Image (cartoon, one colour):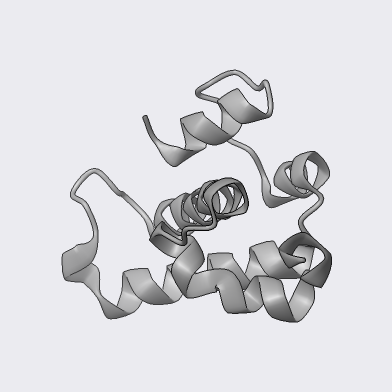
Length: 104
């Protein structure tokens, strides 16, 4: 199951719904600056390492939103288990800098 579908299931949205960063902010309480920074890293990753991009991904924006969903869902995994994985491992510093109330 994709991270987008996991997110939508967790927040009781239709599974295939595409959420804007504003929708995600309202549902999770994660600050817009955090979502923007994660998104920007996704754009950068798409541009600097195109070989890692899966063939079904058609744009850098799609890749960046996938990173946002991945980071958020792996954040919830970390909160539940204490184990970091996925994009959260690489984007935790953003949470720590801008969204300390979620990390503590």
